[in-house]
Length: 249
Image 1: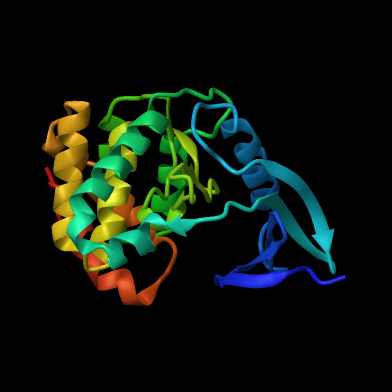
Image 2: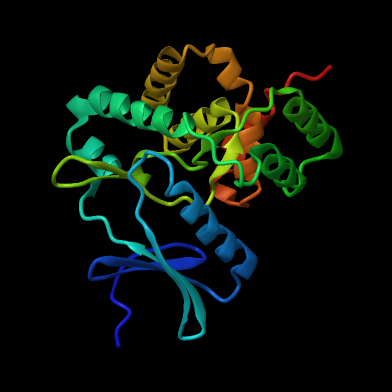
């Protein structure tokens, strides 16, 4: 029996469509603990008031771990933005509204964002002084418990033919500070070279949530360090510029 049509390929997984199901098939080197944690997080966030593909199954296919969820028919917000650049502001407003909706929820059983960020900083390979400054900054920010998607960007938002918005890829979800999630989205736009869109996004988020821009910017070196821990060489120089804005005392 065929697993289905390959629709996406990543460094550590492949994603297939099989009828009304989407199957995420992980490579052998992917941590089983991380796979099961992702499935558990997916199940937990399904209970919030946001359109999320339902978790259907965790299984093994040809000896590889797989997570199966509902397949959502539609196009990504990223695709719509590319096809309709004149509607960028409208799409950004919708995106921010959706992010704020997610952030309005609490799911107490999720992993804590601060714990995740501390671990990521340790994995960066940065010198001890820079790591110390980043850990200190992270310890100094307020503790919140809002649902943070962790990878909130237009490619993870699907608009269905009847104009419903679904949020996919909850692998990085945690509970923590909303401004960390906003800083991550801002950084993802910036990494993609969409500087103007990044600034518009940040303005919209801060206005919608009545958050000082400086408060979100305070998180950027921390989320840049988290991204650096992935070891993507083409991003290193860019991320280091953000990490270097840490104010040393």
